[in-house]
Image (cartoon, rainbow, N blue to C red):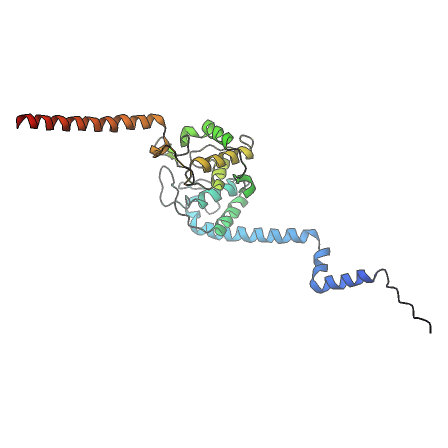
Amino acid sequence: MKKLSARRRHPLAALVVLIFALAATGGLHAAFAPAGEAKADQSSSQSLAIEEGKRLYDVGCSSCHGTGGQGTSDGPSLVGVGSAAVDFQVGTGRMPAQQPGAQVPKKKKVYSEHEVDQLAAYVASLGSGPIKPTKSQYDPSGADIANGGQLFRSNCAQCHNFTGEGGALTHGKYAPSLSDVDPKHVYEAMQTGPQNMPSFPDKVMPEQEKRDIAAYLKTVNSKESDSPGGYKLGGIGPVVEGLFAWIFGLGVLILVAIWVAARTAKAKKS
């Protein structure tokens, strides 16, 4: 008997099987779907965030900043401030403000991180401005701490003190302490210049230099850093430390001298 010769598979058989498999799992549609569909989904998600952000804005922000962010006598315009400014102000609890004053202090934040993102999306839709940074932009890992210290002392120490302890300004205003501030908020403050602070856009201070400053502050002015000199007296420096020694050190010596003299006079009388 003659052996039956094996049938050869058609060259396109494997392709047909692959097409049926993709169709069964929905992969065929994904493989051949237009690239614009993914962009449409992203645009839809952004539109939803803006819509939800507007609802939050109308309830918590419009009374001071106006129904369209145009500003009022109680609050500045938000047109063109960008998402970075919203993330800083709302993410640090400064906004919504509890009451008017010379300066709005940092406090416990009111909104969740998701809600902050929605508010930022809505305000960003009112006009272009500084964009909320990504983690790669402000992450202090691998940054040049020494360069950050030099930059901080040159640009920031006049108000915040050379270790970021903060300091008084005019008319009841102040430069806040930078102790344990999130590097993201340090970066955003340099981007946007909140309240009395000047802004440092990338043309003035490149992204890497901002990261260096954030790394410096995290190293010298956080709970994780050590102070080998002991109690730092607010970190104001050797002048204050010397003054403390003169006032309290000499004061103690004078009190001891008075006590000794009184005891000696009492002993002589007796």
